[in-house]
Length: 95
Image (tube, rainbow, N blue to C red):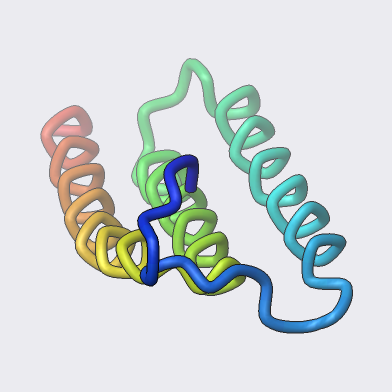
């Protein structure tokens, strides 16, 4: 999202995309922070899943909105791996 490799970054693809981008990213980051604060002392599967799905959705959303090909590819790799690792770690802590 920071570095733009030539010919792999297209940018916003519709009018008012920047506004949508900022609003959705703000909502996702706020949701992440709320889950983190609410479930700070609780080890539960919901916390693990929520704290892994929200950033995965955030990265995928940013990648699609910016039409950033490397970010799309890396987000598609990151999302399932991060969710799987978080669920497995939560299962180990709950036992």
